[in-house]
Length: 284
Image: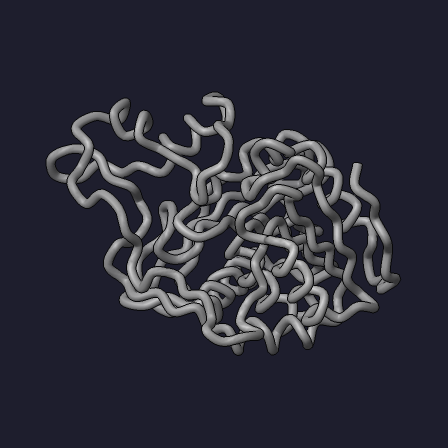
């Protein structure tokens, strides 16, 4: 079922599926995508969890089918997610997030800890401890001329950052869902106009303030969450409630090509409840 909620004057689209999809205020797993992505990135996870959990898939502002703004920040995207929780009446959620979406989940969990059971981050960079701080492009770069056909656009779709090829049956549905019809052909849905600000202090302060159990999952071969980035995350995240899990052979887009392991970690996080016991998880 597809829904829309107004958040600060912008429609935020989200989809509810899985077990208990028609219930109000059910125990939810909220899936938050990364930068320039959309809710379709979770396509491999949904069938692995949907028979046991109600799943909420959010399109953050400026992404997917949600509306666009003049400017974006992690704090604003966190407000988008909270708006969805308010619309659903969700009071006991697991936040599962990929890449930049992990920073958004950290903000939501820090500001609304009473509503968040646990958090799972998949290859999320927690940066900003040292100067200069890495920056996202102020505006998304790339092709601005429309593709003439959907097939042409899909053939040009690439995961970013680059990694070894992922099976087409995993990427083709994502590419198709990432397109919109425009004058002259087809273009990517994400906003190319709005200014993007990565508010490092908000993310770092939120990470340090976390009180809910958090699982930090990263790919062994990720070009985003490097060994140094893991060390930074270990310095920032509260040690008594944080668990670090490496996925051997994994790159950045773990939720696509390591879906079964990611789904198992989400389910494990959902079972943690209010227990704040630190766990040690060895690579499998």
